[in-house]
Image (cartoon, rainbow, N blue to C red; front, side, top):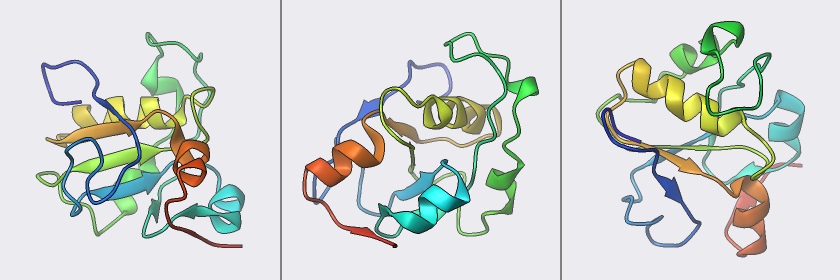
Amino acid sequence: MRSGTPLQTTQPAAPTVQGVPLRAVVVDTRTEKEYKAKHIRGAVFAAYVEKSLKDVAFNAAQDDFQALDKVSTLEKTKPVIFACNGAECWKSYKAAKVAVTKGFKSVYWLRGGLPEWDAAGLPTEGG
């Protein structure tokens, strides 16, 4: 998702993810417990605390995504991919939308999240 453009979804693949260069940082928006149990290799943790409705017209002011501001390795000019627990999980979608409002320039949403990544046999860690 880039400012002024529709949300860009992506699917897991290597060595790029839907054309996103490998230098993209994956941000895992699930709970800390879920992240520690298993996550995409190299992903950084930034929990999205969701209180708003699971809807494209969600109210971000009801949610808490202060964790994004605490991830020192993220640069707003570099590609960022947000992921969570798959299509039924709205955290990564919402996080991607919020990231754009915070000035991130190259934002992607891994709609299938960790389940799709794992099913494709791509590297994970944790547990």
